Amino acid sequence: MESVRFIKHRATIIGGEEHSGWLPAGAATPLPTPMRHLLFNLEILFDGEGYLLCHESTDGTVSGDTWHQTLSDAENSAHDWFGIAGSEWKSK
Image (cartoon, rainbow, N blue to C red):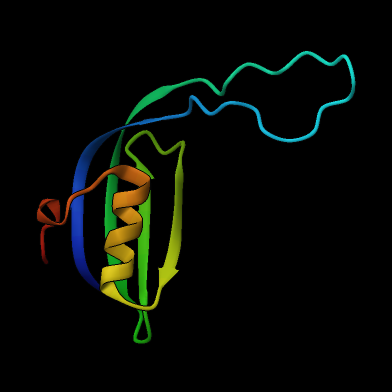
């Protein structure tokens, strides 16, 4: 796979989501998920057919990836999830 874009040590806050979904009658509503301040390394890789948006927190507790048909789709997903502007990406 070929690395096409990356960002190192991007400060991001995760968590704070309110409970959604069904609860039994009379049940207490769970508290929001805890908010965490983390640094993330992100990278967009080309796999020959599409683009993987990979992210990992620098402490190793949070990681994942998503596949996208175009580079633009991967960058848009990074914007939606992490608030990353197109100008923040660095090319390899």
